[in-house]
Length: 242
Ligand code: UDP
Image 1 (tube, rainbow, N blue to C red):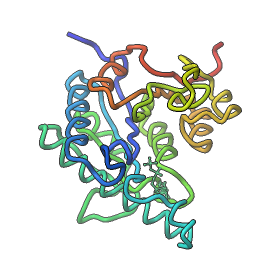
Image 2: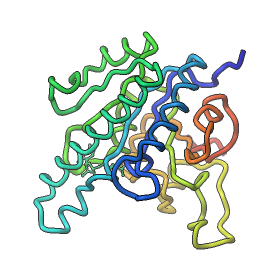
Image 3: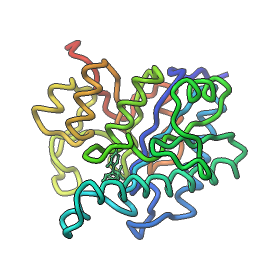
C-alpha cells in the first residue's frame, strides 16, 4: 500500500481554483474534481485541513479600490470564503468524506467556531477540516490564514495549489517562454525576489515557524495525491539548507 510522505497537511486553495473557465463564482465540475482529489489523499491516511480563499467572489483590495472602506471590504472577502467553504464541504460529503467547517467569525447556525483543539480532534478522526472566514481579521489574506493554522495544528507542510502553473518560476511562464522553474527555494529568496508563492506576511510567518510550502498545479488531476506521496512535481520552499 502507498504510504503518504506527510501525516498532516494544510491545502490552500485560492477562490479562483473553484471558478472554472468563467473565472468567477463556483463551477460544479471543478469543485467535484477537487473533492475527489482530496478524497484520494484522505484514503492514503493523511490528515487534511483546507483553507480556501474568496477571490472568485470578492477581494477586499478590489472593493476598497471602488471606495468601500478597506476593513468592511475585507470582512466581505472573509464572508466569501465561507461561501466557498460550504460549497467544498458539500462536494466532499457527496464523495463520502466527513468534513467540518470552522469559521474564524462566529456563525454557529452555519458552522463551528474555530477551536484549535477541536480542529485537531477532527483531524485525528480523519475528518477534513475546512478553515473558513480567514483569520477573522481585515488586512490579512487566506495565505496568512493557511500559514497561521498550519502552525497551530502542527501540520508538516502547506500545499499551495495553483491554477495552470506547476511551481514557482523566475518570471511569468505564461508570458515568457524562457521562464525557469525553481525546484527548491529558501523563504528569504521568495521575499527578496518577490516571487508569487504567497504574500509576504504569510511567507514570513512560514519562515518564522519553519513551515514547509509546496507550490503545485492543481489543474492536473491527481496532483494533490502525488505531492502528498512525495513526488517532486512542484517547487518546495523551506529553510536555508543550501
Ligand atoms: N480576508 C481578510 N482576512 C483574512 C483572510 C481574508 O480580510 O484573514 C479577505 C481579504 O479581503 C481577501 C478576501 O478575504 O481579499 C479573500 O481572500 P483571498 O484574497 O486570500 O482569497 P484568494 O486570493 O485565495 O482567492
